[in-house]
Amino acid sequence: MSVASAEVDAWIADRLIGGDPALDKALARNAAEGLPAIDVSAAQGKLLHVLARSIGAWRILEVGTLGGYSTIWLARALPDHGVLVTLEIDPHHAEVARANLDAAGIGDKVEIRVGPAVETLSRMETESEGPFDFVFIDADKPNNVAYLKAALALARPGALIIVDNVVREGRVTDASSIDAAILGTRALFDVVAAEPRLTATAIQTVGAKGWDGFMIAVVNDE
Ligand code: SAH
Ligand code: DHB
Ligand code: MG
Image (tube, rainbow, N blue to C red; front, side, top):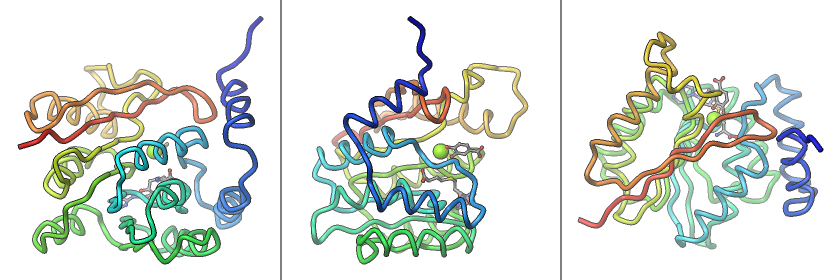
């Protein structure tokens, strides 16, 4: 028997996730508005949700909103008083995300900040906006190191920091790559490996969104 990873992903989603009108509508609106279908998969979104809930996160930071698909999964993990701040450079993406978040019924927990995330994060650091319990990094890959450093500055001990797209069909291992996204992610691995404040691993993911991976790091106690 031979079965493709995308079929297995669909089978898993069918059993453990099922139909979800708010998420389905968000993806439909994204497509209608011309957004690229580079959201996390359903199984990945639910993994983010499970992890955020399991650490009792009530302040979540996301870098890279797109249409808010991952944002909905994460915001649903929050308690009533919880907050999620999500950073997006593209005003149209932010506008579509706002509509999706409001339609999903979690809009009041989410603040979307429009602008280059490196600048937004440096303002957040200056204004001591932390601490966050959970950070999901999923924006432009050349800035991965800058995002990781900002996440570390804004996160509490015990916080989780997760980075998407760290495998890219294995291309991350190519030491001769000149692709800025691969270079950014390779640099991320070097910085994390040398960072005593983090305990980290990475898992490869296959399925609906192809072969890629998540880096998963926990901030150590002081
Ligand atoms: N997390 C989303 C997908 C994000 S796609 C989900 O899974 O549903 C990456 C997003 O990062 C895009 O919307 C893109 O516009 C945004 N982005 C790219 N460069 C950025 C930057 N410099 N600052 C903030 N956002 C950026
Ligand atoms: C791309 C970005 C993503 O965050 C992703 O999950 C998939 C693809 C991209 O820019 O191609
Ligand atoms: Mg991604």
